[in-house]
Amino acid sequence: MTNNDPNRWLRYDSERDISRHSATSPQKCRDMQKKYGWKLIDIEEIENKYIFEVDCVFKGKTEFPNYLEEKEEE
Image: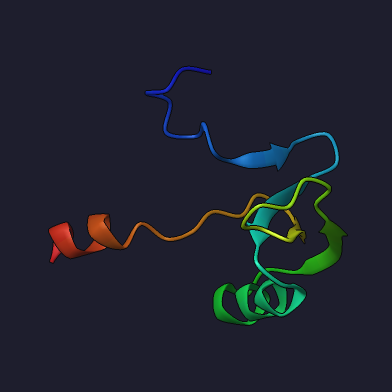
């Protein structure tokens, strides 16, 4: 994957059909689930914590909306 690939940060496992998004706390995982309607299936602690404390594991391929793209269409 190159730096120009728009999916370079997407952490999707197609074999298990799960996506991971890092967060600063387990509550932020629950917040993402509520805000985006994603199904949270696990919260994993990150070993080398710097800013993010956990990985939120969601069912399916999950991506954050591109709010800039939506504004350009208006």
